[in-house]
Image (cartoon, rainbow, N blue to C red; front, side):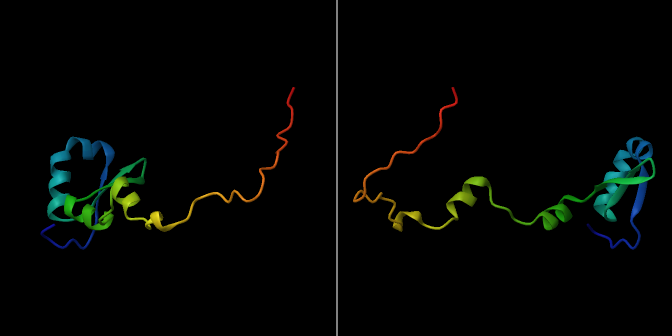
Length: 93
């Protein structure tokens, strides 16, 4: 975004469709462009750099899992000193 915009531009959906290139240019040069449908704000078109700043850096799922605590230090063995007990799960017949 190269210019500071003091007022957000609003476009009716039909108008935004007809002037899409202009809407995109203005989003890049002037700031967010709001598209309305039946008089209600429905979407905002943003410059990609502004979107990335809003979104922030988010790890992908693999990075998320790998960033968790090290579980290799946990003792996950079952205590075998007690006998297993029977559990009645009911008979649905």
